[in-house]
Image (cartoon, helix red, strand yellow):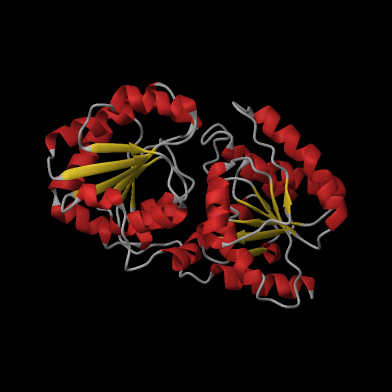
Length: 362
């Protein structure tokens, strides 16, 4: 059984579902919590995945308390009905934490996809760092995307025989989505200019850090007339409010509604660079040779920083301005990042995980 509830989880779990459903010896059950609703449904549609169970927990203005309690309460009956040999969860969301905790209470083995990512600061990112460390305590099987993630798990005291290095399933996802013959009206608007992609939504960045991020971006855009930026703004009203206050009226940026994963991956493949505080994008853009400026003070994906595909620039306005400008103006600096080797996998992570599960279950 695979359980997930947000857009990023769905992007990384759907290709695994597709692979597992090819395995005739395994019965694959899909449960979604609906922690995100519209954005989750878009991804499910893109991959043609139909859940067997949908907990529909999303509430307007939901808090971490409500998400966690509602998932924990509603998934109990599903788990008792299915009684899976293994319940797979992904990454670091509240869905991941609450599902793993429910499995622990029912003594159902948990497999953690994208295990071993760490900042070792439980408040950054919040609440994700706590979630993934807590899930690590519960899990029986750890599917680590990289050797560094494996080392983190070993340092945490995990049994090495339960850790499997597989690569990241997001690279597999892009094999299903990126096409050569692609068209979108936003690409018509960009024309021959350099396209910049922006995402920003982290809880710890909401407020003044996010304002600093947007002000830096606006300054750079005002100085570079051959650049256009696209920002699919997060559904969170707090994020939308800050974005509109700081970026409205800038003719070189389009603030648009969230787009489907099919469109987003094809945008990434065609952009010049990306500024983000997201996690998954730090893995995705380097697969296309696109530099990423990470607008956070730390990252659980240091492999990309070490490889040179990512630059951790924090949330200070002047630091973001400096590095954004440098990558636009300094071709050598840009090329160093664009041609660094992506450390996050070869697109066959799902096959590896499915092989391992067949060995465990059978």
